[in-house]
Image 1 (cartoon, rainbow, N blue to C red):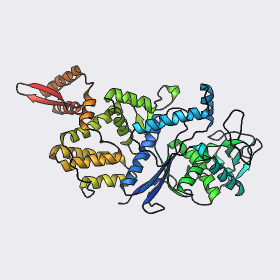
Image 2: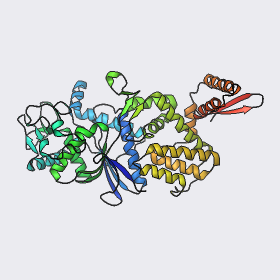
Image 3: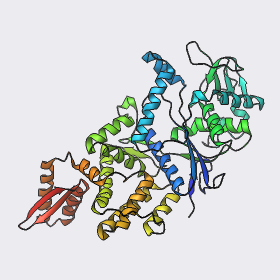
Image 4: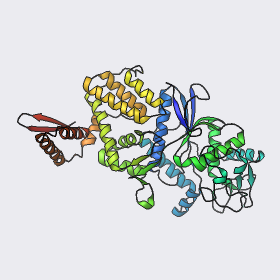
Length: 464
């Protein structure tokens, strides 16, 4: 089975065929660096980190580009509030973003371009658009893209131009010829970052940067373009319009978008008091599960659902993920893996491959890991333990020392709670509720607690 990917553009799962055999170009929209990344960003970046890892495991030489937006209205506003230069603010938060993604186990991109380093390429692209009749300078001095002149506008999002209204994710500006037109180049304002251009001093609009950078680094047509669900419209729609309007060829072959993340069933919002930065989430999970273990627990939580599905972030669901991850580590703790290479002909490796080839189905791939862990526990096979570790490695998990992970997982165990659970298990057995008794044993095992039933009805416990 060859790799198939759901293409947002065609709304179909399609066989993946790269432009150049054996190589794959992948562009993932990064963040505007004016604040710390939130957990929704983490979900998106882990999803496409896993996609990249699977492409590489499948034999592709992947050029993975993730941009940084370091000039933007939000950056200018926040830097003014703090009394520092915009470039100081953007450098600070770019560094913090990189640190956060390293903590989540994301591989560094092949290239990480910053918008301010690609001003000449953006200006060149805008000139092409003007020459081709898609761009014009409005009465206010900005250069805008004439949306209605691009006949395929709305192909990605499914929106129709006549159904769009000003105010629905499009700005209202009377200087534009049409309210739907979007800005390519903004006329300079006093005190803001600005560059020279044929249209006067100014700075780029948001959308043009990704077209310029992806074209320069990956070519005028690229294999995969990915991003969060909120970028589909208008950002990615506008990228298509300006890229194809300038270059006269298909911009992207496969569009990928991650699913939304909610917190306790609600949209994440600072006004609702449920806003989680990646840093806050990492601090909380490391506090709960042991320093370093929280990182992998959070990664496992964010990748074990299919990347296109919506997910809910809550402490209970993270705890459930930690318990599951502990089961996998316990299998590796009990049986030391051998040092042979991964055998893709082995049945579990084949099932894992089938899952990942089916639009990066990590939910199914993780279920294969649990099947494999059960087999490791029953057979004590070093070969199967090695396969468990190696397949987990493709997802960016299970590479830590099992002893360290299990020790960290139980370091803060409440001994009184353990004794309470043991008593509850005894009561369940007396009541012949053996299902509940087995459930309690498993709950304790997931926490790294092993029970030993001794003669005389005595039950002792020990840490994994």
